[in-house]
Structure formats: C-alpha cells, structure tokens
Length: 163
Image 1 (cartoon, rainbow, N blue to C red):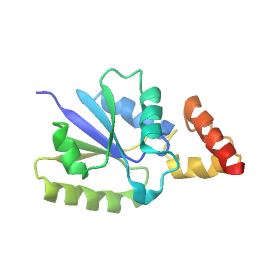
Image 2: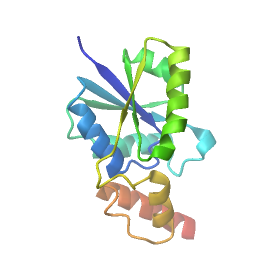
Image 3: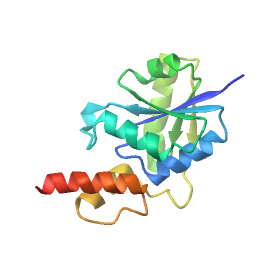
Image 4: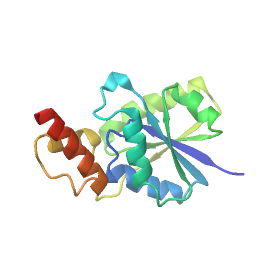
C-alpha cells in the first residue's frame, strides 16, 4: 500500500523550516505532495506560480516529493491526489488549537483522511514565512532561514517596492 501525504500551506515563501519538514516526511511516506494554496485572502507577496516554482527549485533533490498549486477546498485536493494523509507542522503550542480545529473540520468533511502533525527541528522551530518576509522587507539578512533562491526573490520584491 502506497501512503501519500499532502503538506498544504501558502508557502509565501518556502522556508528552511518547511524544507526540513518535507525532508523528514519524505522518509516516512511513499510520496509527499507539497500543496501550495492560492489563498488570495492572505494577500501573498508572491503569486501562486512563483511560489510553486520556488518550492520546486528548493525541493528538487527529493525524488518522492511533488509540488502542486491548488485553489480548491483542501479535502477535495487531497482526494484528487489519492492521498490519505494531511501533514501539518506545529511550531509551538499556540499552533495546536488552530491546527486541531482544522484537523477536526477536515475529518468532518472527509472521514477517510487523517491529519498527522510533525514538529520542526530545533534549528528551524522559530522560522515562519511571515517573519522572514518582515525581516527581508526591512533590509535584514534572511539567508539563515531560506534557500539562496528565496533570498534573491525576496530582494527582488523589496527592490520593486522601494522603486
């Protein structure tokens, strides 16, 4: 039996914390799909195509990882990908209540799906995409928190905003 997991999120941008979680999940599941949500209500800094391209570049070394953009309801996307697991990361205790609510709602919408929570490595537990964006847009060095390609993309956006 092949176990497919979907790791959904906005990934605006993908961080070393995300990559760490994907790497570890790739060792646990037969196939991991990084599902990048269009999520226009969050007003992402990068459009969906850019976020997908960045994630594909960052995760290209993992043979059993696929990156897909989606704008559908998560449970419909997961079912369409023949996955049985939704993978979610928990950075802090404060994440748990919200993630538990999401997991319960997803199970209510589709009872055949299971949500699996993973915690980040100690080195990446404090990294969030929103903090990375904030630091980058104010001229700080984000290179310890994201792949070099993401640093370039953030610098490009910062320069466009400054013009």
